[in-house]
Length: 90
Image 1 (cartoon, rainbow, N blue to C red):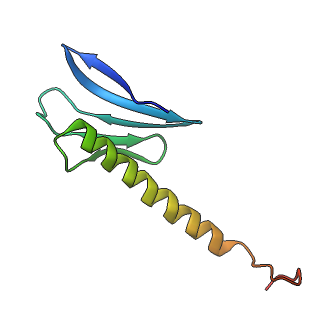
Image 2 (cartoon, rainbow, N blue to C red; image 1 turned 180 degrees about the vertical axis):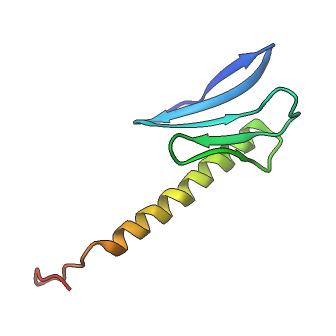
């Protein structure tokens, strides 16, 4: 997987990476200076990132996705009945 940069007026406006049907975008808006935002399709939108550097902002956006997806997976796994080594649901 590789990040794809989109430029406007000679500077990077956004960078996105796709995996499957998911798209993670790190972007900023004209007039917002060097503030970067992250959007993860269907999960979160326009979350302000702490970093002013694009590469660091990408890392922060990926880390945010990891946390959210891990929490969702953990929640899902808690709702699935446990099967012990005898094959019975506990």
